Image (tube, rainbow, N blue to C red; front, side, top):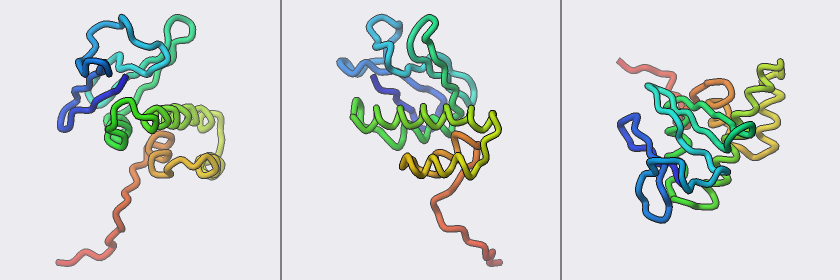
Length: 139
């Protein structure tokens, strides 16, 4: 399954890879996949699994946009790896809540080879621009 972000709006669809059409019900979806379960203004909630093993991941608009735009190839191996990476980064928020230092977290992120800008966005809510900063303001 793929998740598609429609630029310029909050609309998201979970698409059936066989037909390319949005899935309207939970019938036939793989319980190992993250699927969009709730859409709110500025937030998207993804769920994975059922019953006692059900997991939730709430992403902000920016996190979800970053997630979907960086990997637009449907069903690609890279997309699956990316979802796993985002899940791991999202789970690192628990380390922060437990009192782990930012340096410790970022050291682990670096060792795992994850993009630092995405890690800072998901774990700490920091937006990091890849563009060079222009400190000089010309009148």
